[in-house]
Length: 280
Image (tube, rainbow, N blue to C red; front, side):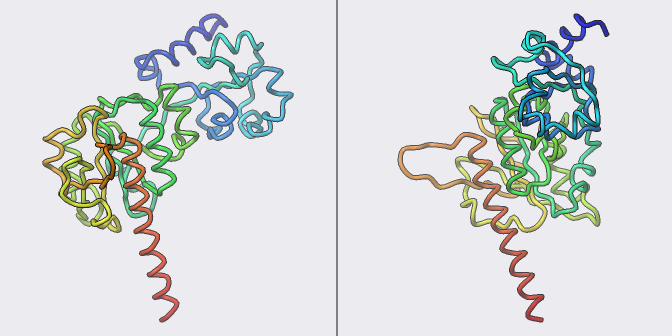
């Protein structure tokens, strides 16, 4: 690819979801993210001489050694990057594809804990939820097509590397996917999942339900919450009690609070089980 066309293509990857979707590629920008990008997922790497001679180059040594790189000037890097002050390294990477609900649930080897997102449109919220999901031990993210593009530059940056490690899946029909999860049509041996809807009118405190078995938490659109149709499919509607005059938390904060309650319950169950084994 000629140099001019290459830079134009990278700009299109940054700016146009259609280009990302059709090419199956996206852009990873900066030392932190490039340092965490699995080398086998990198298509091309670009770096400036200034970056290569800086102390930050060490964090990307594995990527640079495995994939090689094209040396570019700082001006060329500015033309390719969408950040005001590029850090001097940028990669074009191949998107990951999870093949269906079964693959999403079976990949981690842990008891499934999904985050289900309906029409979540703020890239910052989506990226933050991925980070929280990894930190809390969630095993995957399930989304409808109306959610933000997970490979948009803002989402990629805000995941701080969780994008590379938390499996995710977009589906055409989120309601049908939830029905299948609840009906035991996806997990082995017909195991059903409890699916909780985070809702302002939820009847149950979020700490009062069990997240120890296979389960999922549904989070809705920033402005409108979950649709009535999806809420109706839930095993139960849960709420986060709040004081003061605050009416609600934003989607990412609500997801984080609930996920860490699930993490606490699972950790306590594991510690209890380990203690019982030692006593025996």
